[in-house]
Amino acid sequence: MAAVTKSGTPSLSTLLPCPAHQLSGLIAGEALAAGDACYIKGADGYVYKSTGAAANAAAVVVGFAAQGYAAGAGVTLFHGVTFNYGSGLTPGAVYYLSGTTAGGLDTATSTGGTTVIGFAVDATRISVQRSF
Image (cartoon, rainbow, N blue to C red; front, side):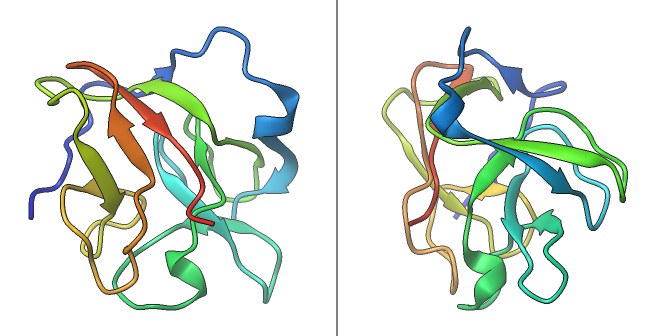
């Protein structure tokens, strides 16, 4: 198991994301960083970092933050897109939701992160998707 380290600030590398792959009009329930895997909490409808620490609602990935957001800010999440994310990635390698780093990716499954949510396109880019 190895966490995937963000290199710099992740950014969208998909030039024109399809509107069907964007979830907008959401509110951040906590500070989010670019490239964080996120879920929408049913109790308040806000966006939080997903975590695979347990097999619960927080382990569902509905999209990824394309930029940093402060708590209370409007949020747009993306799925089915490619991010400039890391360095030294192995093309074709698959990634799962991290069980130790909220919003992060890992090379191995975790208790709640059992679904592939991304794969390395090349040494620096990851294609990301929802977990459902």
